[in-house]
Length: 117
Image (tube, rainbow, N blue to C red; front, side, top):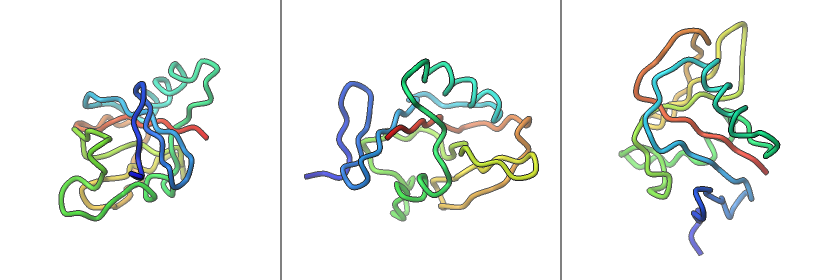
C-alpha cells in the first residue's frame, strides 16, 4: 500500500492518518494571506496550517523537490502554523530547512498546504 493516497483533492497519509489539502497553484503571499486562505477553506472543516514537525514528516530527502509525487509540487516552500516573535516558519521542500520570516512580507513561488486529523 502506498504511503499517500489521493481522493477528491485530499491526500491521506496512511502512516499518520493526517489528511492534507494542497493548493495546486503557486502561491506568492504573506503568512496573513495563508491564514486567510486556510480559514476560508476550513469553514467548519477543521483545516489548519501544518506545524513544522508535520511538514518534516512528509519531507523526503530525494534530491528533487522533497515531496512524494502525489502532492504535485510546483512551489518550493510552505508556510507553517508556528510563530515566534512575529515571524512565521517557512518550510522549504528543496532542502528541508525552516526559515523564520516576517509574517507581513510577501514571498514568491510557494504553495499552500492545510492539514486535518
